[in-house]
Structures are given as C-alpha cells and as structure tokens.
Image (tube, rainbow, N blue to C red; front, side, top):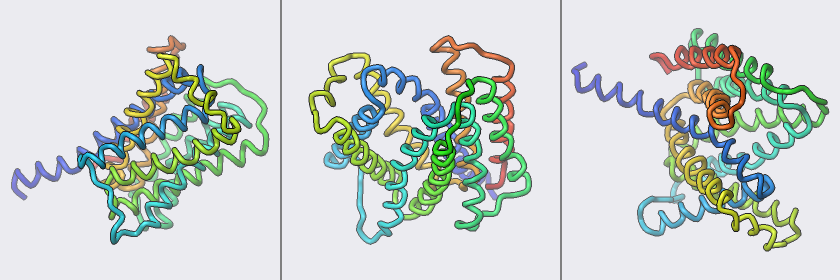
Length: 303
C-alpha cells in the first residue's frame, strides 16, 4: 500500500471520529441552553419551536438547491423507523427522570452503549472484538460514578423505572435504524426526517396542552434570552450536531457510535463547572478518565 492510499485510509477513519466527537460535545453543552430556554417556556414548547425552526431552515436549504432530499427508489420504512422512534425516546426519557431521581436515571442511561452493542450483535451481525467488549464497560462505569457522586437521591416510582428502561431500548433501536438507513439516505436526509418528525410530535403535544392557545405558545419569543437559547438549540444542537453524528453513524459500527455517546456526559459536567460555577471533585476527573480510556480502546484500529 503506497503512502497516498495510507493517507486516504487514515483520513476515512479519522473524519467520522472528529465528526461524532464534535457532535457529542455540542450535545453535552446543549443542556445549558435548554435550562435557559425553559425559564421562559415549558419543555414541550421549547422542543416544538426548536424542531420547527430547524425543519424550516433545512426546508429553505432544499428549496434553494443547497441540499437534496429524495425518497425515490429508496426503502422509506428504514427512514420512517429512524425518524418516528426519536419522539418516543424524548418522551420516555423525560418522564422517566420525572418519576425517578437523577442518580437512578443517570445510572440506567449509562448502560445505553452496552444495550446498543448487544442489539447490533443481534440484528446487524456486528461482532465486536474482545477488547471492545471489555472496554465498552469503562465509559458506562465512568458515567455511573459521575452521576452517583453528583446527584441527589429521591423516590423511585415503578413507572419511572419502566420509562427509563424503555428509553434505552428505543435509543438502541434508533441507532440500529440510523445505521441501516445510512446505506440509502444521506446524513442530511436522515437529519431532515428527524427534525420533521420531532416538530410534528411536539407541536401537536404543545397545542393539546395549551388547548390551542397560540398567544401563550408564542409569548416566549418576546424575550431576547429565550431567542438566543432557541437559536443555539435549533442551529447547533439540532441541525449541526445531528448532521455530524448522522454522518459518522454511516461510517462507523454501532459499537463505536454507542461508546462515543458518553462524551456528552463529560461536557455536561465541565460545562456546569465553567459556565454555571458548579463544584468539581476528584470523582469528576475519575469518571472522565474512565470514559476517555474506554473510548480510546474501543475505537483503536479495528471497527
């Protein structure tokens, strides 16, 4: 293999890693903007406006010829499966946290990489190496440690347990459909379908909750702080992050993709320290170290 071929191979392996890392970093800081936006509007209204705005921007890009969206001759059911599973994930996760506590919720969600890897083995025929199987547990352990050390305890209701585990099963299914649909649909097409699906779901839910009161729905837009947070959630956390992660999902195995999701935990923790002046402890560094080592070992060399 000549030097040019080696360079091309290395580049092909590196670009998806960079994309998914950047995407996860953006998602890790998204909760800061979410917290700001939710000072002025309910979670459902924030999600509705966030995805509606993202859908509008992407639609304009298609109309202007800057991007393509085509369903002709493609397996639409794969794209529908991917897009339609995202709203239930948000629903199960939100109410799972509501009916449990942060410690338990964080611990359950930390097992997402393991669940996704098992699902990929069962349905996609992926066969992780022994090293990957062992080291995929490190990021999970890191998230569990950071969550348990930094969260308060509370009452755990059975409904919360059911919702949280349901959210992780749905999350695994989303990764599988994302991977399978990437064969025929571009990162833009998958992201666009995702934005449309979420926009429809959360807008309908918001209108039902508000009983069609449009004045209450649009009231938060009068606040500049809300507008800034909404733009960040829409453009960067919505469109940019999803495009980057969806591109990477088409180039990497589910084993790698799942492990990278723990990067968001590190960014959330240090984002709170830097921007919200939350306390930092040695446990934060320990958890972060386990996550980084695990990701490095899982992504090293073979897929």
